[in-house]
Amino acid sequence: MSVAEATEPVSTADGRQIGGVLMDMRHITLRFGGVEAIKDISFDIREGEIRAIIGPNGAGKSSMLNVISGFYNPQEGEVWFRGERRPPMKPYQVARQGIARTFQNIALFDGMSVLDNIMTGRLTHMRTGLFRQAVWRGGAQREEMANREVVEKIIDFLEIQRIRKTPVGRLPYGLKKRVELARALAAEPNLLLLDEPMAGMNVEEKEDMSRFILDVNDEFGTTIALIEHDMGVVMDLSDRVVVMDYGRKIGDGTPDEVRANPEVIDAYLGVAHD
Image (cartoon, rainbow, N blue to C red; front, side, top):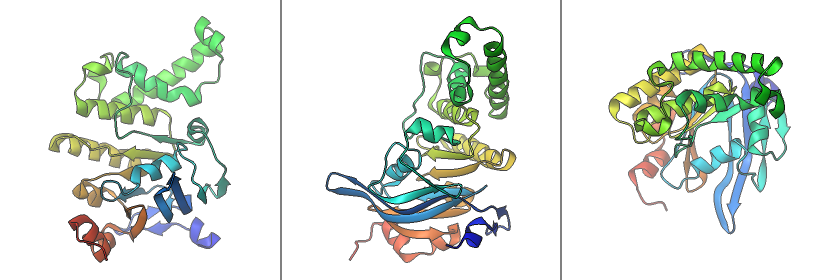
């Protein structure tokens, strides 16, 4: 891809404009011992788009999300972010770049309130030291008040005001997923990674989550990359889709292009591969 192609905005299938390349995954290979979880995969994520990563169970989707978020460092290939090659990083360093995520298995503090869980998403924005925070005066007090203001806006945005003081452990599954989204949004990410945000939800909960994802993308301008098994949701939400199967990339394009790809159809219908 040329520099001009990487930086120039493009139009989506519905005529919406998305920006230049935000993240570029180049020839990524990830091994666990002798097993290749990801095999020489390249794709990009553009500013302002909703980019889906799909594939059957065991395709390597979560491993790819873990590469993006710094949990894994690939043995081969390069990760480029905002036009610069990213060296091997720890997850907290990636978070400081403006990348936040949710997890396939909910990772919240059950004994803490919804508000306190979401406040943990502000850690990358806290600058005062531990002692000043404990004393809670001057700059530490002003900083916490500013962070609390951001969190309260997210609580309103996701319509969870009535549970803000409820311990997370008492919440039903669908609301826990919404709280986890809120915590990720509290980091004010440029790139939001969602690992199966609809998993385990009923129809009504999926509709709510889909609406919030679209609103986050539209109102905040947040770039989103998501893994999801519900193909109806993927095709409705996504600007572009990359398809993985057994660690390989077998499709990449608009929802319509991916839907018509014979290899993608075979993978999802379980047709034997030659």
